[in-house]
Image (cartoon, rainbow, N blue to C red; front, side, top):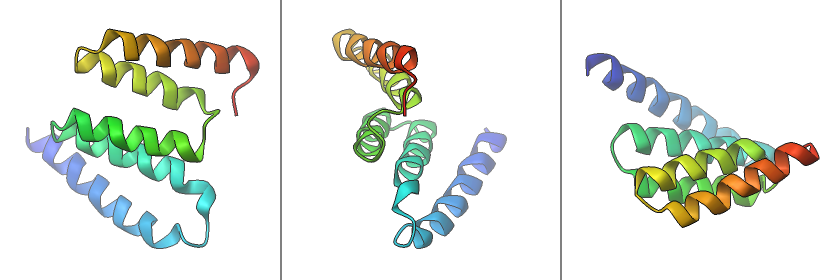
Length: 99
């Protein structure tokens, strides 16, 4: 538990630094929201993690890993149909070269 708290604390510091740089480098916004998603998941708020991943997808819609993460998050909240949709998108993007 102590290790997890330390990880979340480091993640918060990193996110704070990244947020200040996003105005000049919008291409990093997808990654920023992915990191926020990880933070929320580790804190136990999977629904907020899903919301942040959807924001990441808005900035990088052809990033296959974002779709795979959404599939896993939806499985975690027992939404298999949504998980299946994102898993299929992941497979499609992976086979087409993604980004």
